[in-house]
Image 1: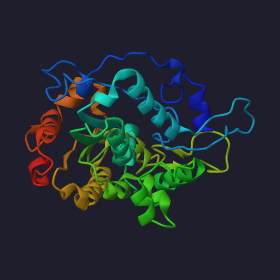
Image 2 (image 1 turned 180 degrees about the horizontal axis):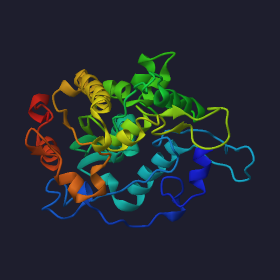
Image 3 (image 1 turned 180 degrees about the vertical axis):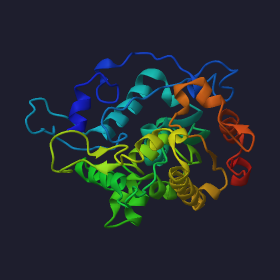
Length: 332
């Protein structure tokens, strides 16, 4: 029902009917070289999604929702293929020499899920002319983590969506092969990125405000997944912690300590990712309680720091580093 509701709303993540043909770029999409030194002269394409699965759904027919006349469609993978085809036929993608794939929030997840698939497609599209291809996931490293009661609400939902939308063919094939019987894990970043071959840079806060509300403080909606009303989960569902989960300034000492356990767990997971120690890769992990993908604003791109380096500086340095550079040179 949540997907159906989005499809009927004015939200750009639920329907293409409200999209503008051109958007004003800011942050990492800005053409102001004072703001976006690394990419201000690039051609930029902002690829919206409206399938609810970060371009991964692959259901042949329409999906009918009980009590609703208008169906919905889970065809994100076909949308992704259509975008690549359109960019090739109408906008000169076949001439591209340097490509960086970036995404924020659900788009960050999409980057992790499709990094290698898009790379392989580009190799064919550019007929071997592609010189550099790198990927950046921003604010999309969502943990497979329990809520305050230890129940993995978010992980269970993601695995349900993975199966419901037939996403198996769309995610990283190496991950699927390595997780036989648990293929749904490949819809979650901490498992998916282990198998990414393309150069990768992870940008995330360790105490993401969406995650504190909708993973750590979430509960499953009543009757999920069989209910036909509302979304699958309720964010900030623990009354004693709801305000704290939204704003750390509202936490008392004990609540704050509880919230910091989530940050500690995030650090444990991210630091355990061997793929991020591979030459050519890196990360920018900061500690602001926000959920602010860099494309959304200049301040979100220029303000956060780690080790005295801004997000913009870290991404730019990594992009300009050779793929043989030690990951330690691009860890912040």
